[in-house]
Length: 194
Length: 194
DNA sequence: CTCTATCTTGAATGTTTATTCAAGATACTC
DNA sequence: GAGTATCTTGAATAAACATTCAAGATAGAG
Image 1 (cartoon, rainbow over the protein chains, first blue to last red):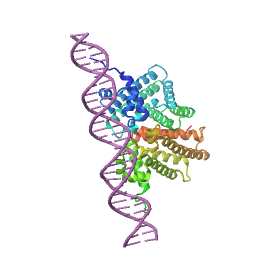
Image 2: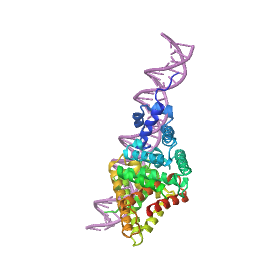
Image 3: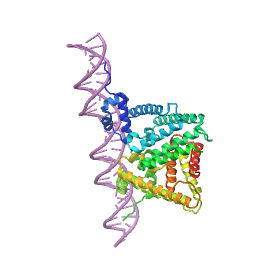
């Protein structure tokens, strides 16, 4: 017997970054070898093929983002404050301009959705989970009387998520810190006041 | 002497759609041959190579979008009404779920920005032009006293554009007509009221 | 320490792809 | 109507790529 030498999580995070950096199609096996330190044969042994590595990386991404979500929202604190911090975190990611900080789900959705139904289904499921979690936070905020408007948690969360999508895309052309912060603040205040 | 047989605009629009459909990398010369009706040799003669065809298609896209903008905003009518119609048009494009209705600039930006500086520069220039045009419309709305809030035309236009980005991405996972309309309405009312 | 099951390696394979080019077709000029 | 410049065609080319596989390396069992 003998165990695999590589650290699965590290390999998957490296692959994630490589895919976010160049996109799936343009990331060659050579790039993946360089990024993960695994030779082609090992990749095929562990993940079947390039697409399998993407699927595994998407799984890891889901885990990582779920943990991040916990970090922001598990405490018993005002939900609006937590949402604001979360939004600020997104803005920081946008400003950093590092490929590793992009959202793999959106990147993959843009590139692969129309060509691979299985990948698309996984992406949509992940994103839908995320939306549901955000909606839960808004529900708590409403239950706590932090928000008193007419809009439902579902409506608020959809608008919030649309805003995050918008921020991420906006940063691709004009990632200036002041502009990004201003946009996030407009978004947030629009959600609070009615 | 002899003139080319193909219709340049038609060819470029076909290429645009092909690129929006599959993305640049995954659109093969065979796909382009099928889409445009031009054989590889002709494409290389007319546009130098695949990348040249993309650049030409981006030029045509710019023209087409500029014309569309004229159509929406050239008349002497309340600017807020025109903006609302414009937003509605974007929503219709989102709902249609047809690749041909996506925004080539955003698609290309997502796929190519980090790998091709020249393409990136062209995309950012096009998008910046668009932003400037939208800002002009908001300036007119303010001058006409249609809007009386504190936010500047620049701020309003940035938020509007962020919203459009958000709508487009949102539709990729959940392109339901009612949800999309509701999001657009929230966005628009947030811009009007202060 | 030896054996073996398993992992690692990287060159070889076969496919796909962008690109080229020479032969053929066609419209315009004189 | 002949000549020619230009366009069109699609098979040939060469590079890039994902994938395979057999030889080599290594950790754990006995």
